[in-house]
Image (cartoon, rainbow, N blue to C red; front, side, top):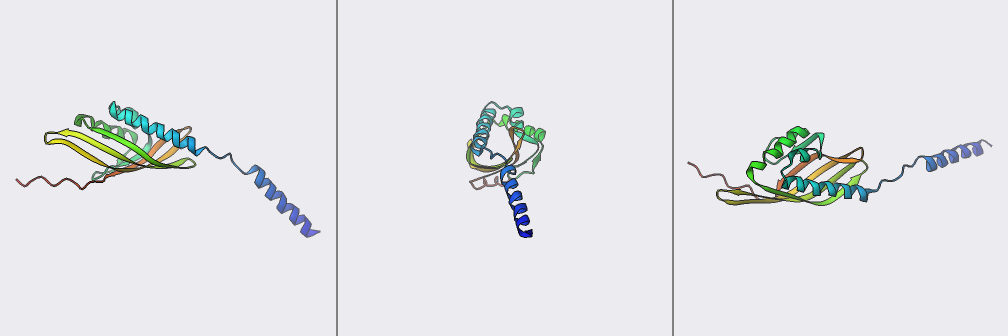
Length: 160
């Protein structure tokens, strides 16, 4: 009789967990599509030199990890970072690759291209990036952004 009571308790717990303990699975395809839409907007913000809109795609505590530079922390400093690009008359575009969604976090990798006029001719570069995203309500925001070039660094200037 004692074993029967234990069996009923275990079965009841199992049934309760099976029926009531599962959350509705998220639609990761919809999350990926939402992030890709933000990426498309990001490229438009770059073309229109809208550093405020770019900064709005980053979380307030976001961090940029630009190559050969100190980290840039916070959306306002990230806005200033992008605003410094506009006088260069540069062109920058990102191309998303893989986006993996894990609940309220996502990781994206992709490629980028850069060009800017210089007195010596067009400066061109290209590389790859890695971005981590965090869902905030119904919005995805960038929390970490790192990139680097696929090309060797330019040679140092000649000695004077």
